[in-house]
Image (tube, rainbow, N blue to C red; front, top):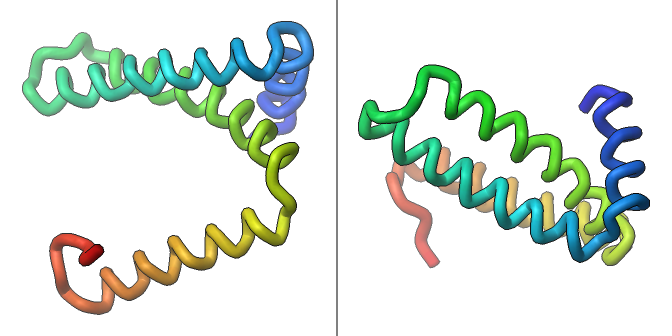
Length: 100
């Protein structure tokens, strides 16, 4: 992530607060979901998917900062390891869907 994005994310969190920015994550996620649906149906504007992806990436950086304040780094790392291990297993199994 470019340093300027991180710096702006920190400024936005300080200015608007955690709750407001978490709501922005919800809004941008919904807009990205809609853009993906439009793209898959061939109905979206040419750059809608890109625009919503970048918006989501920016607010996701803010969410990563929020998560790092809530959880210890070791817990975050352990969750990444668990999720990556599950993906690695799925990729090696030839299965199309993960088993729960």
